[in-house]
Image 1 (tube, one colour):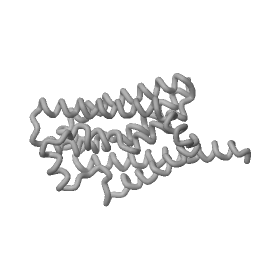
Image 2: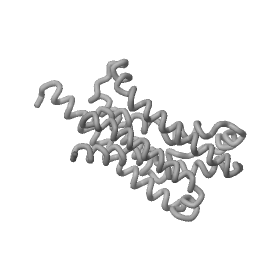
Image 3: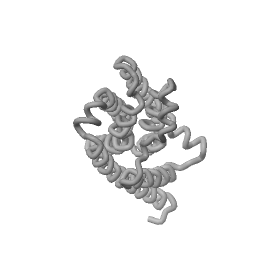
Image 4: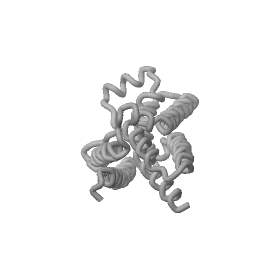
Length: 214
């Protein structure tokens, strides 16, 4: 029971921090200024559904992909951990924001493209970081119930993301405001940094045990 609870906390904290729906809410507000309420709700539903499908698909096919490319679980943990560390530095650096749009890109997207899938669902909600983390989590689940917990975490994060995006206007302009969002992003960046380091340590431990050094 303790292992399952620990895995739930790890899965939720890591995935939620990387999905980071608060930052996506800012982008969502910028891209949907000229949409009516019905269109906005449709965009949110499609974005969240796409994110959920992508992460669930990775959950069930991640290990198959590893075997296809002859990658070891420990290699994925180390590689995934390094990627998360780089991602965390981008979030912690106040001069850079990994979820931003070039002005010309924003104008192009406003001309009628399906912004629900690109860029909201991919890469903002379910980008390389979320996909890598999901695959790594599938390798760290304690038992069969761990897979059910990971699926539950993905569904829970999808629901939370939907609620945050539905209330994006209030959250970005009245509740958190720009300064609050930046502070929250730094906290999430620190969490991701710690998780990335832990992934690397787990990978190194597995590698050392595998070659019989310990």
